[in-house]
Length: 107
Length: 227
Image 1 (cartoon, rainbow over the protein chains, first blue to last red):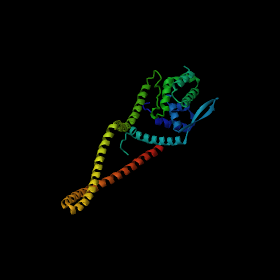
Image 2 (tube, helix red, strand yellow):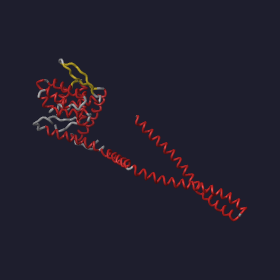
Image 3 (cartoon, helix red, strand yellow):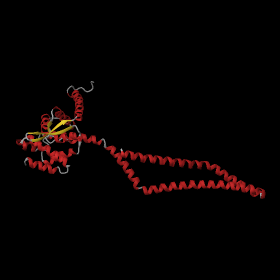
Image 4 (cartoon, rainbow over the protein chains, first blue to last red):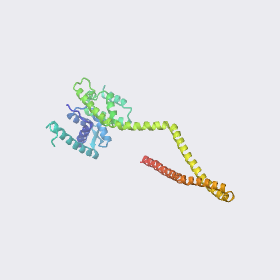
């Protein structure tokens, strides 16, 4: 991949994954890694930060006789994700206008 | 190194964190190993990199450091040639945030200049306060002396006038001289009395105004401090 990813975009992707399905750290990491090239060590700080910002919350659930920590999106997180999605569409539209169509000043 | 040793080493590297943060991180990676499965244990260890590096990543972000969350894949795994491209781009991103940070620096410089000026004023206070105080004291002394002189002249004028009027009947020449002197001194008094009186009224008003605003300033600071 030629393009690097910003930490805000990574936040948005994590929120989106967890919004679709309440899930756990390893699964989130693998889902993100399906799309972009990040280290497995990248996600913990992101999850922890989102948790501290009260955008994600955790709960423990038993799985195969052991504990597993699940994440879910808070209402604040949902709001943030909506903002991220809006920003993303705007960003994508502007980039594509130039990158795909080569248009600079038309509209 | 197996998983247990890896996590132990990680725990040792996270000693500077609070117990809560450390436990949180260790629990996360313990579950991470569990979910990856025993068969992938060595893959995970290789992917996560040396425990010291992982600890650095955790600690950098535990301080809620917004922009430093990204450690791109293969940054720490050995023998990666494709990883270099990503790394340089990550550093590009870091540079961008640095330049954002720089825009705030001029503000900080202004503050340091102000602080230096204040510090110099405080340090040199014994010199300039005494000089300013001496100058103000001399000015005030001169004004007070002038005021006293004027009052004395006024009193003298009245006394000389009375004496002159009495002497006018005893020794007219002396009486005339005394009346002349009294008129001169009373003239000077009336000429200078009003401006000096005005000055003292102004000084009084200034003192009241100054202490009022000083009081408000201190009170305002205290209130803001409470908020």
